[in-house]
Image (cartoon, rainbow, N blue to C red):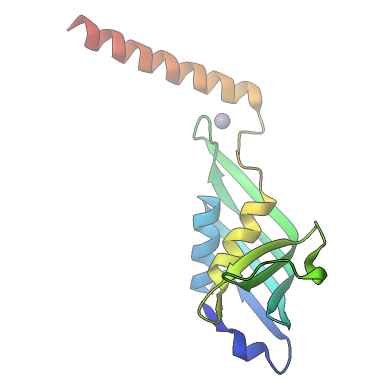
Length: 159
Ligand SMILES: [Zn+2]
């Protein structure tokens, strides 16, 4: 979903979304590589010079998979979003943006794509690798898979 920067000239705007909002659900599911059961977001977008600041809350729950053994993994997160976007090509050296806490992205064509903001917020909040809570069971599944792969390889070799 695109939001024209011009829509923020007069005053900040609130963007709220839930699971029923297709753009938000799809962006979140792609970022999570999972299936959602719950999604709530409540953001305020504010323009400061040419910088768009996105602040608010995001909560989601659903099912993803383990990056090692591919077993289902429960995903449940509630987080605060604080991102800033500058026009593409901007130097990014705004004194007001000196805070290291703030992640700065880029927008182009005078509009901000909320789907991308959502994906970024999730990518920044989640660990890059998702694994089973039960490390022992995960190791066992991995072991079984490796063994199966090894046996397939050996059989192929024998032929
Ligand atoms: Zn696993």
